[in-house]
Image 1 (cartoon, helix red, strand yellow):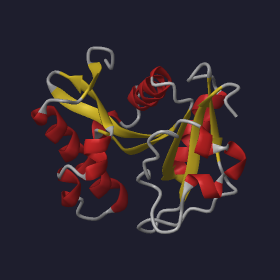
Image 2 (tube, one colour):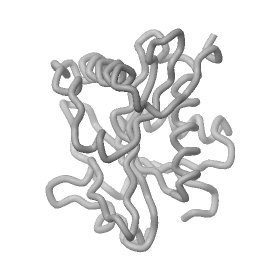
Image 3 (cartoon, rainbow, N blue to C red):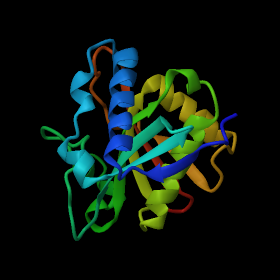
Image 4 (cartoon, helix red, strand yellow):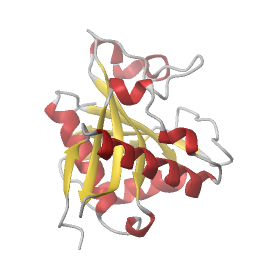
Length: 189
């Protein structure tokens, strides 16, 4: 049963390492390459917050969230090369708003088909809202983007909206077509 564990911010080094190991395994399974470099903490891990789901002392899911604010305009993980969200989406007025990116989202293989992914996404969005950040972006495979859109359409995430931002072309990563997605509060855009 998926309700016997809990979500928490990963501050303990052992818990964080379990998450890093999980995300490396997820990338190996998803993209088919050695993800051992993901077992190491990077600058975005240190700058952001890692939220994990723990059950029986084991990390079964987790993700990283990084914030960008007008007072602290951090370049988010997806913003590399010449790509920035502010330039790609000028109609959102991001230079004057708080927004975030969820990245390195990982769920243990044995829990991929259950409710845990929905609960993790919900927890990440709630964490962003608690930090007065109504817009949460992510890059995900087109397959997962369709899944998230179905979940939102079926009211699996009440009071939250989900968009696939088709106008922004995302490069394929490791042969997998990717989509830029946005979770937001109703009325935020």
